[in-house]
Image 1 (cartoon, helix red, strand yellow):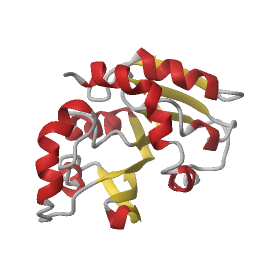
Image 2 (image 1 turned 90 degrees about the vertical axis):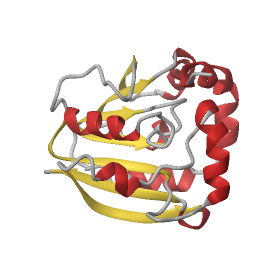
Image 3 (image 1 turned 90 degrees about the horizontal axis):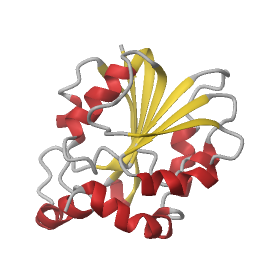
Length: 198
């Protein structure tokens, strides 16, 4: 089953599963976006728009997702935001290089089949000096986590990957520098990460 198909099916359930679980950490992560107005910000993997209530109306946003079903669920949350919704692939972004001031990747790097391509594409469309805010679940380098790795054999085809080691992904994108890495949920399995493009 492809991710496009599975996320079309689970779109109606997505909010019930995730809306309250990560509310505080979403808000804290997005609170790192600069306060000055007029920035162009990419939300790569906008899903059903759970980030939207925590965004400042002083910026312009582009929200990308793979499925129309998720984008349709995000529409009612737009409110007064200047937000353009785009259907597209996070691993092959349909945007020009150096187009965005900042990027948000909440719960997307461990979902896409190729995390490295997703992060590389995000870096490509980001202006130098811009930040990438990441909120996701990652294994630690060298962590056995045999239960998660076993479950990953099935879960990676339906809803999410459980075997992504962030440090390995970041090593493939040398223009991005780690500025902040904080454990936030599930004993540090979920992390809030801030990267800067040099």
